[in-house]
Image (cartoon, rainbow, N blue to C red; front, side, top):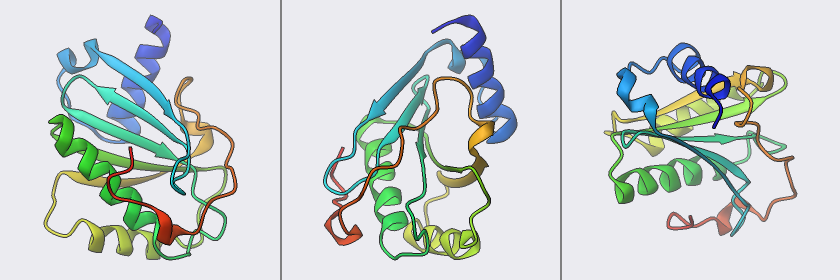
Length: 151
């Protein structure tokens, strides 16, 4: 990873997402592109040190549809716990503000109730640093087919 992209990712994580991670955490960054499987949309996964797991996802068409945000929350929390990260941040990136943002926030809050180490963020696609752009949204299988243990 180039120094410039490392700097832009650090600015994004600290500035846009509000993470207070210490400097040493940013010495090790891994960006992975996870393909869509089992109905889950493609995810850009960012591992910041051994502390923070970030999933960047494009919201599906019909973002008010039930099930998808809950499954993304469950999948991310399971990955966080399985790999020993301190926090999980789910980032929904879209070119325009989501009309269903408030409903999505409420559903995410219900899905993570009692978990203070999982957070939801809405960002504009243009706020994503190089390397964190998500793949083009592909057709999805109905949300009921998502699995919490899907990786």
